[in-house]
Amino acid sequence: MNEQNAWLVIKNRNFLLFLIYRSLVTMATLMQSVVVGWHIYKLTGSVFALGMIGLAEVIPQVSIALFAGHFIDLGDRKKIITSTTFILMVGSGLLVTYCLPGVNILSQQGVWPIFITIALTGFSRGILAPAHNALLGQIVPKELYANAATWNSTTWQVAAVIGASLGGLVYGWAGGELPAYATVFTLFILSFFAISLIPSQGKVTLTNNEGIFTRIREGIQFVFNSPILLGAFALDMFAVLFGGAVALLPAFAKDILYVGPQGLGILRAAPSIGAILMGAWLIIHPPLKHTGKTLLWAVTGFGLCIIGFALSRTFWLSVAFLFASGMFDSISVIIRGTLLQIFTPDEMKGRVSAVNSIFIGSSNELGAFESGVAARLMGLVPSVIFGGSMTLVVAAITARINPVLRKLSLRKHKM
Image (cartoon, rainbow, N blue to C red; front, top):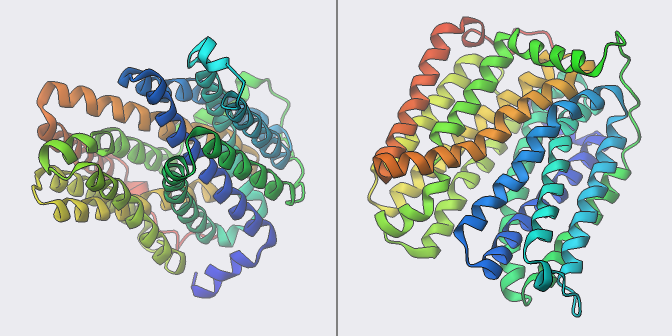
């Protein structure tokens, strides 16, 4: 794997269109998340209502994921993504409609119509997460999986930063909810157009005609019978579950570092910037040598950075720890995505990706919940030190009990 291969995958027209689509749909989704949060808080003034946003999205997302994986493996993956993106576009159009002059839905019904739309978004994301991984395996040759996974992850990080920032800028400078939601709607239209340009890749040939629950169980068992996939998924899940300090950043900015909302913005951006830069490096230098050890050291480095952040009382040192944590997290995410593509048969990628999306998707919300509960019981700083320490413990246990993952080297694996 070399620099030539890094750019060779970009010359794949379908993969380039896929990256454009992922960028647009990610920007739209993250921008909508920011605008919805501000909009609901403006209408309710309730912190509890803000917490309910994540719950309204994660419940349908996790509930549909395994069933989605089954149908993704049965059907035309490109058509499934196109149809689901259309649902996102419809939901975004509803948010625009709620804010049109003369429409009194929110004044009459409160914020419930917005929450229903959020649930629709969660439902769609529960389908799209496994569908994206499954389609990626169809449009990219196996020897370019590592580079494709790196481009995919890095593109997502860049789009997430742009989308979240764009949400605040448009909301603040363009006059409120209506222009912000209209911008989101436009991005979803463009993403729908981009995915429509990719030719259908057809259905994957089935090896049996088993029922839905048998096939779902087959996908779950495949992950739990694969020490490489299970180890990688579990490592990432526990790192996010215990080591995520993002949910507590407002408290650190206000009560520990005394930097206010401007400093909070820098703290929030630091991990993503680190992830983007590391992703750019890994595009040219994919982690193929000593892959398992690299993954374990990346999770260890992430945990150490979280502990360092908790102990820091200097703003820029805290930023540096978060920046480094994003770099380590990027290594973990990219290796996990590569392993999923390489070690999962094409006819099972929908179901295995669905299991992965539950591992990672639920851990983000549960991690925020764990951080809040631990901070309440232990105190702010001790809770983050505890989380980082637990990440180190998980990495050490995995290295001990999973020699297959620890010794894995993709350079020796025939791709």
